[in-house]
Length: 210
Length: 210
Image (tube, rainbow over all chains, first blue to last red; front, side, top):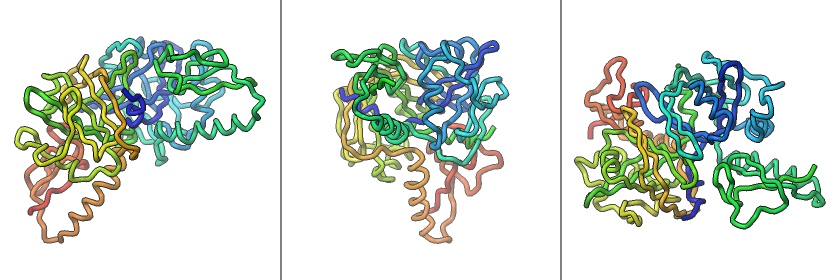
């Protein structure tokens, strides 16, 4: 099996926001398709270890901000590279609140979808949610960010910037490009696979010492 | 709710092939994401009225040919605009057979994924399948066809060609651009929605008399 064949599937990049009690949270995801009509329902798959996943399981509501091609790496890092368990991801960040109470973003998105979970399936590493679309709005005429463009352009530019700091910088760890998991150590063990999303060492990028 | 907001989701275009008993069949779909790891599983959603859907329900196996940007409209029409109930879609068409016995195409695809259904969910209009990837191969380094490119370029060119036949051609029916359903009659009734996939009149294109 050649895992690269699976990379030919097309994905967008989304900010998945939710609210549970008084707490709001959000993470970056790349899976969503319209799964059925009458009523319109979408399917998303979320890593179960994410706090956002737990919160959606409990509250049953979420927003999906469809990120625009112009979205900054800083925003993706803010919501994708840290956990809501240890950080308030929305602190000092401008966001809007949908009718269902969940947070979404306007400036860096082209559309927002509000949804209510109507079914779910536990897939071990991920939870698959089927959710009825309760509202959907276009926010701008910006082009949507694709996962391919994120990998080839947005992340590459960031890597070039990192490389520019000079060869004397040492690698202190490795970050999974798929789910954001961070391994501490200069070298990944042979045959290493991400303990969260299962992707191989090829999908990890170095984290340099400050 | 603005349905156009849902169009900002990113999709590929796939040939979904299956085998049931001695019969092979395939249809065009646009939904697939990797849903989980360990083992790798994908999610697809298929219109229940499609013969391909019925056959997958029975046999539990399928292939997904990830179509390339260079895929011809003729191939998409062959598999997407007619039913396997009334036509042998593979007649006179060059195809390959995967290890699981299901048909796939090489020339107009960039990858093929073989899968075995491990779970399903009935969503009324559609059946959602979760399937374990049993094999996956890259077939070429061609760029994958996106649903957006199919709508903006491949179909537009076809429309221009159709328009070129002259204004004297009369409209004899309307075809749903989403699922291929054909309505017979020169005008769609007010407030018409596709009886198969639920999409509105905006998503229909004219069928001209020969």
